[in-house]
Image 1 (cartoon, rainbow, N blue to C red):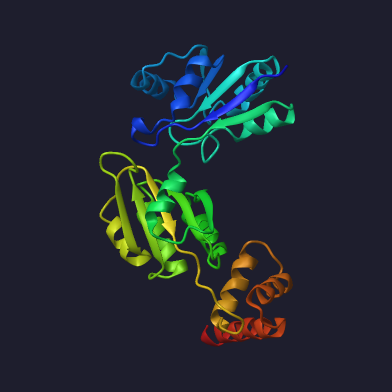
Image 2: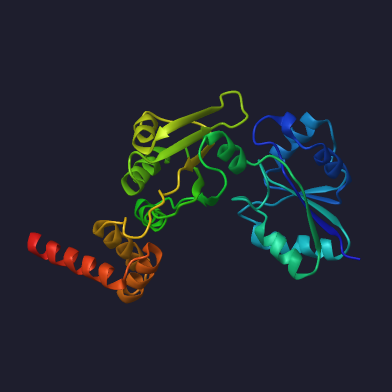
Length: 285
């Protein structure tokens, strides 16, 4: 019989949030694959448990090479426990490759549910939680980040993403530019830790606050685009949406058709708006 791959959630801050089953799995697994073995050691000491099997590292740098080794262990009948530094494995952390490879070999995959910065930030934000999307980390380069944000400008679901404290001010500034300075958002910092802070406000206000410097682990939650019925979207917004799609690689004809369908307006209306914008640009140059 094949073994079992167990994805285990670990505390995102307060060690007391560790699920009770985590200690049991750490003691009983044949192999514990950890993103950082030193952090795992601190966690096991805090939980008062000793791993029963061997401990191996499994992080971004060796994920591709180590995955086949762990899959062979699983196929051979081993129980492999995967833990990352904080939260659930594979959610912007190592794990996806191993899960996909295990599923491909018909290995059972299960989980020990645990803390998640995504859901915790979403719940604390005060923004709508009935529909949301998770974008992980946005691109580091300013141009690529701006393009990604433009692609999401019409997204009506609440947006959740992670960000480095060194880039959070630039990201909030870019969001204010693309989404509008008044779009509501929340900066969730150091969740469940001693200096936990949730800063709420408009994107412009939050960008100004972040310019003074922000520390710690950051999760951003941003309100979705406002609902707009047919005929309520102005020509300027229609043109912007077409340009976003063109920048993403779509041909103009397909971009116009897609924007018209999304906005609930005739294709001719979108086409005329694009042509008028082009003519205005020529006259202004």
